[in-house]
Image 1 (cartoon, one colour):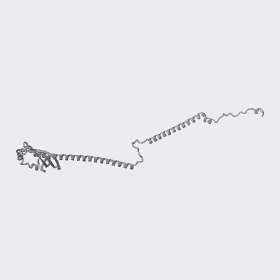
Image 2 (tube, one colour; image 1 turned 60 degrees about the vertical axis):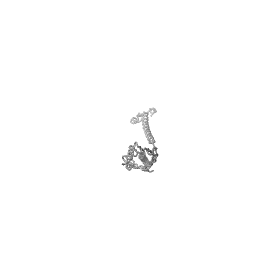
Image 3 (cartoon, rainbow, N blue to C red; image 1 turned 120 degrees about the vertical axis):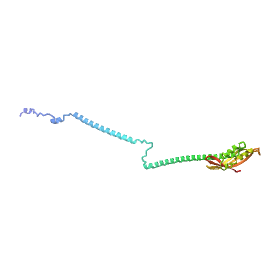
Image 4 (spheres, rainbow, N blue to C red; image 1 turned 45 degrees about the vertical axis):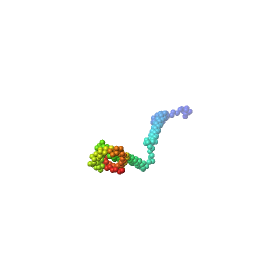
Length: 252
């Protein structure tokens, strides 16, 4: 072989560069698009993480709200002592009941006391009124006995008998006319005056009253008035028809 033959260029088999057709199809996606997809996936994952972070934040806010609610003080006017038990409250309740019972007893005592005082005052007033009536009746009877005039003898004797009863009235039975005649004939003029009086004994039915009286008397035998002093024990009876004098005694 000559040198010309050695210099002839050799032809190589024609072959396209790169991988097989199938591999080329699989990798037809450009590198830039693949990077974009990966970035999108990373962005989605980032958003997912953000959402989760937001959920965590919401849960944290819920926990904070519950914590705030737990720290809100009770609306009661007095602080609540959680250490107190039902056994601790029982003595307090009993104390309140006892205090209330004591207050009720005190009120009842005051009411009863006021009622008793009113009744006592009423009874005292009743007794005073009764004693005053006994005294007034006895004084009037003595005044009637010591005041007699010839000109008004009949009226004077009737006035004496108007309050007489019992033994005192019996003493005048059958003696009214003779007594009146003596007063007229002697021209008696007597004027009585009650000086003092006081109750000896008294109850609802009768009383004994001492009455001191003074009398100025004149008659035909003694034209000049003469003073006389008397003391009477008068028994006054209390009946449905009123008070009357049932007995009169001279005691000096």
